[in-house]
Length: 380
Image 1 (cartoon, rainbow, N blue to C red):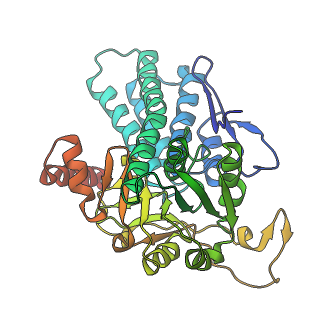
Image 2 (cartoon, one colour):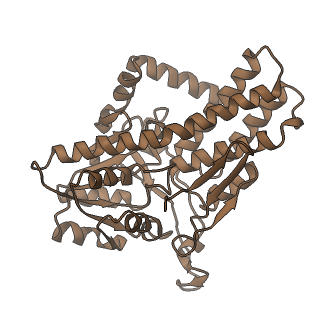
Image 3 (cartoon, rainbow, N blue to C red):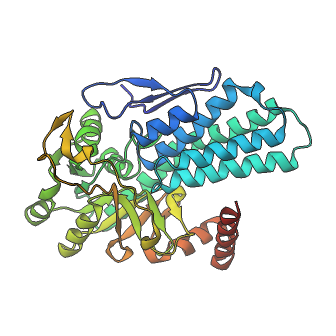
């Protein structure tokens, strides 16, 4: 069985996603018939993981375009619809930067078609949009495998030749969170494929239990030697077991290297620092938001109290207690050993220079482009 989070048939415009709220007890797919369905699936965490969220957002727009092409009278109408609906999708989960960046890419494409396409063939423009989304789909797994290779090589570079490694990870960053393979879990998969992985420890990741429900499922599925631990066992684990490295994902990496990831990541990074264990963040370049200069500027999503007070509709918390349920926390760059991307591994403080070098421009030019983009966002 291949783990498949998103099923997309371009020919008939049909989109289905695995309802991750039901995993591991039930494997069930729900159809996304348009942007409203996409928003609901993202907001309710039926699909989650920054790369997968971004793709479902874009694909839900593609579904509407394919199924209702006749509603657009002209280029301006098409542009307005894409722009409004991509902005709406971003509100479903504001912390994950991938969705915002992909939405901006779709809006920029819509503007380009509106201004520069001489023809007024709406079907041709819709086809162009769909091809843009399809390209993003094809590159996701390729990027994840690059992250896996770079991450595995980085970790193995710091251990004795031929030795095996033990990794700790948090939340879910595998096939359920991407189009396949995964980011942090992609690094783990790559180590396993090389025959150099001794063991993986995954946290349960309260309150939504993505580690217990999803990461554990993927590890068992791939026959990777693994053990599930409660979130409050990390310090004891690091003290009593030999952990080679911690590898986590990211929902946003900002210009100074600060990183927002699933709640609980920050405390794991502090514990790793105390125990002298390398702490890596694995994320595609699309998770890096250079417009923000520090983690203090990241909008942190807060989730419903019910996620803390109930499990499977059964109340586990005392009636009348108030709850605080942030979905993410921010790990300072000073606690991060390296950021593993699909272009290689960077020091957190060097991430913008790393990106500028990778795309072949100077840092000053990169900053100017980001400044212009920020101004455009403000003007809109």
